[in-house]
Each structure stands twice: as structure tokens, then as C-alpha cells.
Image 1: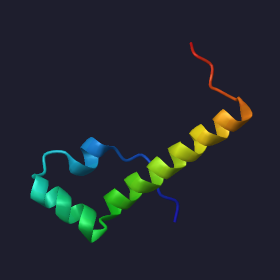
Image 2: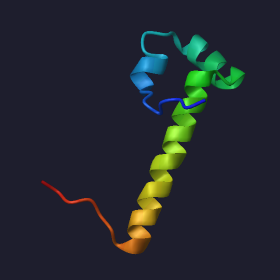
Image 3: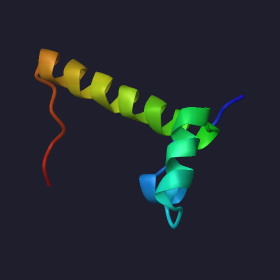
Length: 59
């Protein structure tokens, strides 16, 4: 059951009218769920890096 976290806002909501986007959010669409998981993961990584001082190197 390994699913990719590679979901983008444009890929999930792109080209859809606002009413359909609202229905997707309210209905718990699986693309919306994947975006929420991705956001939580990214926030967790940011907090972890800030706590340890382990920032990615800028190139």
C-alpha cells in the first residue's frame, strides 16, 4: 500500500471550478487527503530541522 506523496495543488485542483474544489475538500477526496499528508510531513520536517539546527545546504 505504498503510495507516492507526489501530489501538487495544480494536479489535484487544476482547471476545476470553485464549487467542485469545495465539494472535493468537503467530501474527503483522496487527492485532497494526499495533499494534507504531504503538508503535515513537510511541517514536521521543518520543525525537526529547526530543533536540531540541521538545515539543508544551499547550493
